[in-house]
Length: 476
Image (cartoon, rainbow, N blue to C red; front, side, top):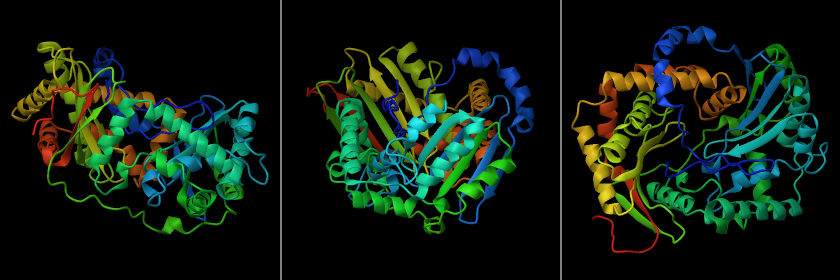
């Protein structure tokens, strides 16, 4: 169980991709059986990687082409280097709200016809907003690439937004928040933990926005946001599929090339910095709708962008402690001394500014949250006093990670997202491609050094999700 599960994509023309958690991986037993094969494949991964071509237009648009000629299909993505963490103060949710508005019309595309045109040509489209970026994509037959590229170029700078659009989509977003957050105590709990974890940095503000601020968003807010951030010098075009790189670049020059830059691409994305955390923070969240109480703790730490070597060690640490039934926490708390229904860890390395490392325990009926937290801390203390993961543990986890990487290469969308998200967050192609090598190079000493640094209560927030008030009180 993950205490902050990714919110499901709603139906319609967009989806909010705010969650920073990884999905669980393939069954460990199947991966272990492939460990020898993974070792052999590791040496040939670079040679097997798909051909990648890059270009930059005069107006600043960055382009990347990933060739995949197995089927006459193409995935186009346009990534904007703007997300919820870049919103003006008091206008939370404007990035996600504007994602909705991008599916309206232009001078050339009838109102709300964008997705209908894609579907009529046998394709699929969607979008998602996160803290650090917003992305739009279409998956369609390769001979329809010019069509969807034309429409993306058109709405980049020529969107037509009316007051009626604002009223309608604002209500849609508010209802989305009601369904996915207000009616979900776990989502509310996650919001409160993030708000406590970040005193100053905007990562503490939910991507979907605070309800009272979303309800006041106006057309002027939307157009100001659009004119500043939606421009070629702030965008990355990713095309993956059965295409010729030279032809893609020629199309991009013809369709995106005439668009004027806004100048934002030449400025640094400056955000409020998080001050040093000087003491542990705690909270309880009580809701009668809670079906399963649990305790969760989050720690602030580094990201792949800010410290790639340490991030790789933290990624391995999250798997050692909480990556499935063979992990230290699961074995100690659900198998050897079964006081918990579930226990685990997570780590988000992909954010631009700050990362989060988390642990959680879901106690069995009759076990208090205080006891669950005490057991969780005991597992950490035992681990920190040990020599760290064994070579067998590291080999197993590295084999799983290598397999995940290879499986992801089999998907156009996964490839497009890997490079799009990395580039949007300021990584280079070399850093994106080198992440798996960093994972494979992590040692037990690296894992223990990362553990001893990250498990600092002064940089943490511990939360209890509770059904109703009772005699339990957070430990002082």
